[in-house]
Each structure stands twice: as structure tokens, then as C-alpha cells.
Amino acid sequence: FARVVFVDRRGMGLSDRLSATDAPPLETLMEDLRVVIDSAGFKRPVLFGGSDAGCICALFAATHPDLTSALIVYGPEARGTASSDYPWAWTAEEWEVYLAEMDAGWGTDEYTGRMFEWIMPSAKADPEQRRWWRTMHRLSATPSSMIAIERIWAELDIRPVLPTIQAPTLVLHRRGDPVERVEA
Image (tube, rainbow, N blue to C red):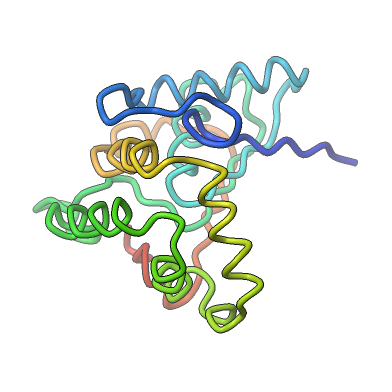
């Protein structure tokens, strides 16, 4: 009844790595999604995006209502960095700490342990899961490429386009999420 296509963002997986100076704007990442949708022959797919990928899907739904039948986002934020009218996101200082830790620890067991506290606490003590995660990190992106990608999210603000989304939308969020606050 359905086909699923999983899209890695530019700079990850098999695509060329990004440097800190060539990170594309969010609109380019949205157009990358459009190219994949066209190539797969989808007419009006249901889009699902978790966390920052939810922003790409939301922007796509707002920009291409004729190509989007529904939108599902999981743990998204509408703005990457906290401001006076959006206090739920990370502060600039929290982003800098996060990016410095990523730069120093990407692909290491210590960094994996810290990440698991956020995203997979039940697997933190599982050496096989940690090994798999470290390998996935090393194969999917370099530290500098990940920092470039993460800076995109730190700088985003899609609030102006949210009211223009016409597709039926489901927003999902887990209780006690240590990364994304439900208010965001």
C-alpha cells in the first residue's frame, strides 16, 4: 500500500562532504527533497521528518502544496536558536558547546555515550549498539561536515512559513525529550 524512500541530507551518507563554508541554505535542502520525490515518481507523497528534517519537510509542504498530501513531523523546532520571542530553543552558547563536543568526539565511544543519554538511553550500556553507532558516525559524515549541517539548524527560523502549510499535519513529540522541548 506504500513505498518508503529514506533521504539522507546533503553532506551525509554517499553525498560529498560539506565544509564549514559551503553549507547550503535550507531552501537548497528542500529542493534536494523535491529532486528525490520527482526521481522516485511520487505525485503527492506523505512527508515524514524527524527533528531538523521536519523543517525541510515543513518548508517543502509550504512551498509545494500541490506536491504534498500530508506532513508528519517528529520532535521539530521552528527556530534553531533561542530568542526573546522563542525561548525554547538552545541558546547560542549551548550550540557552541554542542558543536565543540561534536568536533572533538565525533565517532568516539565517549561521545557516543553522551549522545545515547539523549537519544537512546536504554542502549547506553549495550557495547554492540555503541559500536554500531560509532561506525555509522564515521561512515556517514566527517566532524566538519556535521558541524556545517548543524549550523544550518542553529540558524534556521521557519516560523513565517508555518501558517501557509495546507497539507494535513501531524506533530509528534516524545515525553521528556532531552533535546527538543515540546513548546518548540
